[in-house]
Length: 347
Ligand code: NAP
Image (cartoon, rainbow, N blue to C red):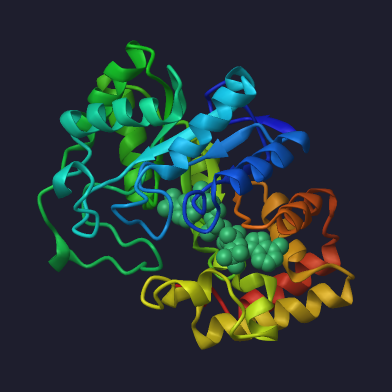
């Protein structure tokens, strides 16, 4: 598995990152251990989690994903060979169990969040500490339209960076990243760090897949010019791009298990139509639809690492195997032709 330097961090991460948001809900600890072991066996050294995981977030399962990873790191004794990424929750009314519903990206919350993540992860340091979503009003999680009417007070980016800088000096975190950010936020984090001598973000973790390519509208250029790595999440559009819900709409999986409100953007008729067309294309080239969707992400020049998720070992194998598939110009043209007709249907 190829390892590449993540942004300006100097850390070498596998192009495939293992996502863990199912650990503690859809996957119990022993299943999670098997998925982690297999990922490492295949050369993955990059693991992504978050304080709010597993998803769907609930008070009773809060922190379980980090706890399971911590147990696994301790049992395997392999902390030094893993690049461990986690995230602090931004403000939200939907997670009252996290710091009494007062989570935000200020110094008090960041320090508490880091201390708790370190305990659960049973480690002395976090390699990549990410802000899960911004403090300010920004559209994300399937929304793209900015609405000035939703403006609210937020923590200044300078304060957030200052707090993170102190934790870097203390050795509790090594590098920082943002997530679910807009082009303005991405540039602002970079500009303020430069102007104020604060730490520079090394990565941005945003959604990117065949049904949502909006990162290609300007954000890719910023990442290129500013040397920030894109860590792409939801490469299979929550599993929709595997085609399994088209073959069997009632199949047990994330899109049928969890609230339709939460995953509505990946259930739209236009997403289903695009998926049908990508499925047909995959078949013509003897790939599974999942492999076509993942090979697309793995081969985009602006993606440093793609975070894959799998609840089953055979799915994980299929997803990792896609790293060796190369898409020729003809397939790329056909993918772009579908995209031109059904552009970003998940938005
Ligand atoms: P995804 O690739 O879009 O969806 C993964 C899900 O699709 C799996 O959990 C599985 O769900 C299904 N699946 C995967 N491979 C399959 C296969 N070969 N055949 C059939 N079904 C398959 O990725 P994601 O889970 O949304 O995101 C990956 C990771 O990114 C997460 O674990 C998390 O670390 C990160 N993430 C970050 C954010 C953020 O806000 N920063 C948001 C989302 C995700 P079922 O088995 O339930 O069908």
